[in-house]
Image (cartoon, rainbow, N blue to C red; front, side, top):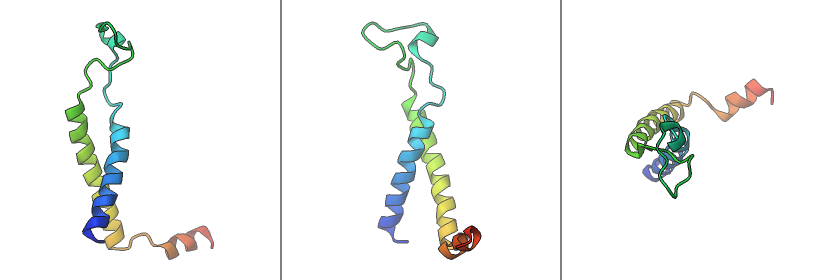
Length: 87
């Protein structure tokens, strides 16, 4: 795998993991009891974006590492999948 391909795959994994991590620990303004005038009551009270970006990077790195190992050692191949699916 080339560096450019690896970076592109990492970016896609990172972006996908970000959307999985964003809802973690979110409390709305209504739940916390402090609704700021002019904002939606369902908006997060304290979004903690830096923590979420850090967790996204950690999780995406682990997922990418697992994918790179599977690719490098050819643990999953097209032929193997076809055989298991009966093609």
